[in-house]
Image (cartoon, rainbow over all chains, first blue to last red):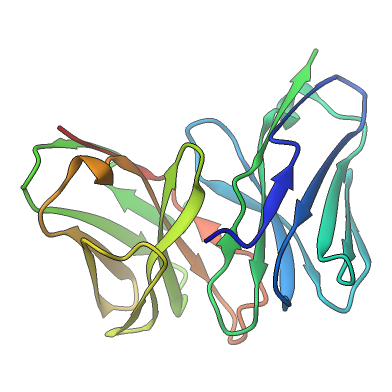
Length: 110
Length: 114
């Protein structure tokens, strides 16, 4: 069963715009992670945010976590065509393997 | 990623035949995982390992078995392949004692059961 659910399922934006993806989950978590997957490739880890953190930055990525709402958002600023990919959130509820959502497909149009 | 290799990359097999997929890592990571990815389902955990000869079932383990006789190798076996096992299979590893790190994924094996 999916723990995280991303929203929207698909997103299309122009190069230079910001892209925001959301993730909602159901149970308490230890940490939440975001991954990117380019077509035909494996997933690549982007960022991890712990349950006691509210915001984290990495380059053009900004992740927020609201444990009271059981939700997280991934913001990609000044998007580029190379950001075109699927993005997945994944949650860890302690001593358990990551549970992944179904992903958001992002298309950045040049 | 150079530290984790999956083989084969592509395979077509017939219904009812046994199939073994291999995951090889050079990172000396303790934890290893097998996921399958299907349209509309995202990634689902099949089996995982927390050490040599230590494995456990995931969400969709029926029809699959695993073995880990060495730290670096984690094998996934479909005892008798069915069409519902047509999927892309990903192996992943993670280092660290508390697993508060990102997973490293292999490039995947695309399996087609005809």
